[in-house]
Image (cartoon, rainbow, N blue to C red; front, side):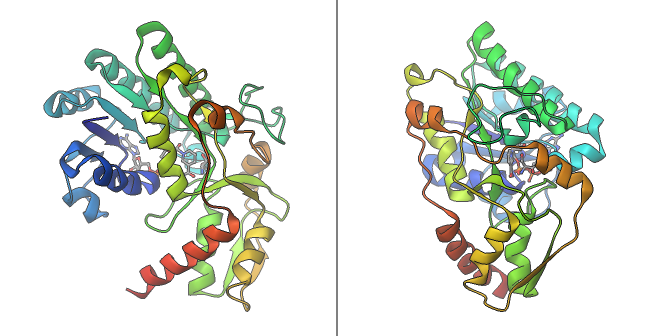
Length: 317
Ligand code: NAD
Ligand code: SER
C-alpha cells in the first residue's frame, strides 16, 4: 500500500482508519474522501481530501488517476437499521458503489479492501461458532448487499485478478465518531449515557448476544490483512473476525464495575431486535487466525477501561 484512497472516510471507521493509515504510510499518501466537508476537521485537514460519491464512477476514477492510487479502502455504505428504512438506497450505495469501486480498481490495477459484516448471516445460519463457510440467507437489505458484495469481490479476483480482500466485521465500538445507524450501536451509546446520564435505556433485550470489537483491533485487522502474503490467503474476502461476545446485561455489568450507580432499563425497538436476533451469537474466526495471524488485543474488560478513560477526556473538552 503506497497511495491509498479511503471512501466513506468521515464515518465511524473511516475517521479513525484514515488517521491510523496516515500515521503508518505518510500523511500525503492517504487520500480521504466523503460526501461532504463537514465534521472531522482533523481528517479533512491533515492530508488530501476529495468529495466523492461512490455512486459516481467518474469521481472515483478521476481521483485514482490524480493521485496514482494503488489501494482503495472502500468504507462508504449504509448500515443495517438505516438500510431497513431505505432498502433501495442501501442497494444503490452498498452494491452499485462497490461495483464502481471494483471497476475503477480493475481499470487502474488497484487492490481493494471492503468490509462485510456479521449481517451477511441470517436466521438459518448456525448461530454459535458460525463457520467461515456456511449458510448465508440474511433477512435484511443490508445483509443482502453484504453477501452480494462478498461474491462480487470474489468474482473480481477470480475473473480479473483484482487483489480484493475483506473481513466480516462484528459491531465496532469506539469513541471518536458516533456509529452511523446500525443495530450494534447500543454498545457505543451505553458508554456515553453511562458517563453523561448515569442511566441507559437499551433498545435490545437481555440475552441478545452478538460479536463485537474495539476500534483499535478493527484498524489493525485492515493493515494485517492488506499486508498479508497473498500466497497464504485461501479465503481472501469476507474473513470472519471477532474479539468478544456479550449481551446488553454483560456490557452493563462491566460498566457498572466502574460507575456503581449506573442503571439500565429496556425499551425494545422491534425492528432492531429482529435484525439482532437474525445475526450470530459468536463467529468462528479460525480461518483469519490461520491465514494471516488475526489476534485481537481487547476484550470486554480492557475495552471498557479504555473506552471510559478516553470518553471521559473527550466529554470534558
Ligand atoms: P458509517 O455509516 O459510520 O460511515 C459510512 C460513511 O459513508 C459515512 O461517512 C457516509 O457519509 C458515507 N457515505 C454514505 N453514502 C455515500 C456515498 N454515496 N458516497 C460516499 N460516501 C458515502 O459506517 P462505518 O461504521 O464507518 O462502516 C464502514 C464499513 O464497515 C461499511 O461497509 C460497514 O458496512 C462496515 N461495517 C461496519 C460495522 C460497524 O459496527 N461500524 C460493522 C460491520 C461492518
Ligand atoms: N454494526 C453494523 C450494524 O449494526 C453491523 O454491520 O449495522
